Length: 195
Image (tube, rainbow, N blue to C red; front, top):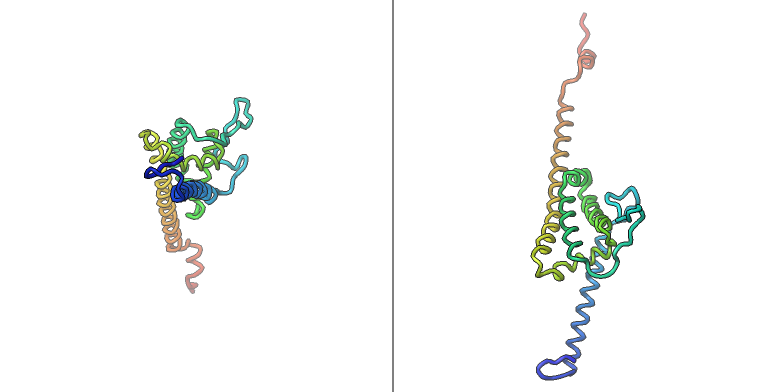
């Protein structure tokens, strides 16, 4: 029984405990809504950039769908996703997409990478949302998670810069093409005939 100010189970204490329980449920609901809102359309088979974890025989491995992520899985995901997101390959792929397509593609890769490590996507996303609280006293995990979050932002900014550079280059090439004098065959046809 809860004790507050020397009193047990007063209506005020019961109301406070009810609010605390409701707050916990609202927080859990908010996490599940965020997972749902961030869920891009799942790709299957060869359309995926990262294949789900497989057994040594090549069969799909059973994915973690319950319980907290281990410290090792969190650190591995954060460090490897960080490298993946800021890789030249990822920046190139994101830069080829519109801004509206790039964000969902990046999230899809992160979700696929969770399954590549053996964690079901939705469960992994929900558990990653808990990492700052679950591992708040673990300096290495906090650092790895912060690096992952930074990589998410940096990859989008780099891709936007590359996309802009490519658009400017294409526009300059098109303008140069329009300003280039026509070939001799064209200019001869345009010149007045000599008598």
